[in-house]
Length: 338
Image (cartoon, rainbow, N blue to C red):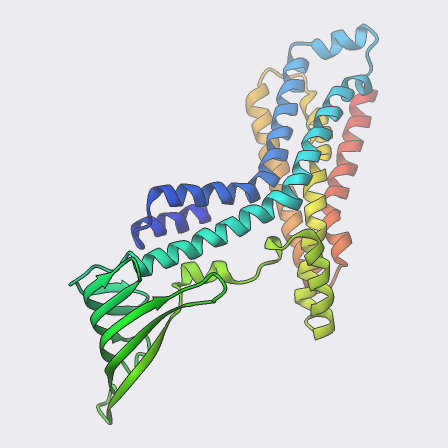
């Protein structure tokens, strides 16, 4: 839901097309699927065994000589398939989605600069500037007869007049730049203590991307491929940034623990689903929400402990799986003895 708020902001505030936003949403789904698929597996297994239990099919199967562990085989096989897909998802698809997301975000920033400027109009939402250009050549990103009011420095606003200018952008650059030719720069202090006028042949303005774009250009552990995580962690340890190094190590182990939680959720779904009740759907939904809520709280707290250094990252990221695995094993053992 927090991502949806940001995507809505792209449409409403920045004027980004719905098609681009839907594509961003698709890229974001690659990171959400790693947890949503195991949740769906937990709910479906709980529903199936809850229905079998409420219709007394479990009793009939046991009376026919089937043990609970024989009923586990198809579920375990299906959970292994899901686990394999989730492992591929966390190791490969998440990184692909993150890279594609960042690339599209930067492209949106470029379009905001080159396409978002209207000829002969004061554009007051241009990277914190007010910009006017009498003539615009969109093909070459060039402008003529330019006026700019820069109020990003509150105590020293600038007024700039230039004959020509052009936009410079590249995926290798952290920002975009507006290069102005043959003009003058006028500045005045807020308290009117000084006034300056500077003539220039060439002047470059750094168009830092808005916060919503800039946030997605920062390096994040979840965006790096598997082999780069440990390499980056070693580099950070050598630099003395232990907290950041532990963050990368935690992400390395998260990719595996998040995939293998499918097996644990499948076992937990069987244990919780075998209940002699008619309210199958409602109880399955409630049990799923409780289990997922507890797991997520454990995951967030153990991740915090790992980054802070109180618990080794490998142990911390596998601890929720270990606890839920023990719980699932105990419930299955208890159910089998009934």
